Amino acid sequence: GLGDVYKRQPYKEALILMTYIAANNLDDLMYKVFEMLLDGKKRVKATKGWNFEEFGVTLGLRYPRARLSRSESRQILASCLGELLWYLNGSDQLDFIQYYLARYDKASDDTKTIHGAYGPRLLSSNGQNQIENVIQLLRRKPTSRRAAIQLFEARDLVADYNDIPCTCTMQFMIRNGRLNMITYMRSNDVYVGLPHDIFSFTMLQEVMARSLDTELGFYRHSVGSLHLYEPNVEAAKRYLSEGFQDTRPMPLMPKKDPWESIKVVKKAEASLRLNDGTSIQDLKDQVEPFWADLIRILQIYSLNKSGADKRAIISLKNEMVSDVYESYARKFERRATLRPEQPELPLEKQ
Image 1 (cartoon, rainbow, N blue to C red):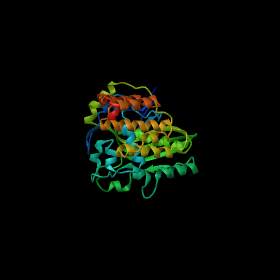
Image 2 (cartoon, rainbow, N blue to C red; image 1 turned 90 degrees about the vertical axis):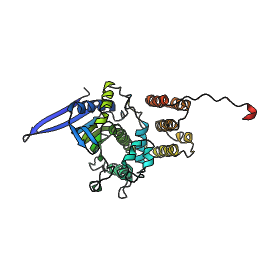
Image 3 (cartoon, rainbow, N blue to C red; image 1 turned 30 degrees about the vertical axis):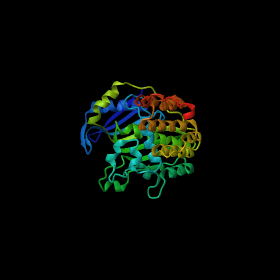
């Protein structure tokens, strides 16, 4: 079926355990991972506290575009999108990511930057744009096996920083006209980190596929230490009580080079976060519906943070081209307040 595959093989009097869990969508994947961790009860004390851990796990997402949770408890989108754009901006600035994820305040060593931020490592590590380098390599040699991005670096072993990359490598391989991706993480928090990581990495995979004019292939997510921290155990159990969710993939990314559209989305994100007065409607008019809908999600998030009237959120929700995002927009709508209508001024006083 949607199936976990567990293979146990004795070798030289030792038990080698290889765990592979595959599912159609992110929710089914998380459901199976939570079940495994809560049943296993392998309790470990780590730097950030007690957790239940499974060592050496590979997760397979059969449909990488089914990257969003549709559950009530983990139905997150704006923070995932904000983190992805933080990466694609090449930024390590704390105030940028804190706009979407307040918990990053504990990750900074100087209250301004994040040592382990992926953006600079992706786009400017030792003067190298690793994303562009991979694209160029696969254009020259489509079957290359060295199209790998490195995020964890030698310097991360030397000093104790508040934030060190959990992701070690991302490898991209074109086979049978499809771009496949394998991520290796040294450590992954399944409740907090996994939904954000799979969203960002599979979005990057689709961006790369469009850049290379290939179809989207499989996504594999291998983890050294896959764990659930004890404070999140009850939340994980509530998640399990919701049962399995429908598979609703995000719309297809337009089949063209995506980088000009990404520039527009990044400009819209910065304008909303910094409130600089740029016309967001003008920016939405410059991109395809796929990207315009993501800008609308950012708008709704910004309105919600500022305490805007619910009507403005409803208006944006009604503009959405894809109905995939309706439940996420409704979640923000429920949080917003409906302010009394202001009476119109008499004509002579307007």
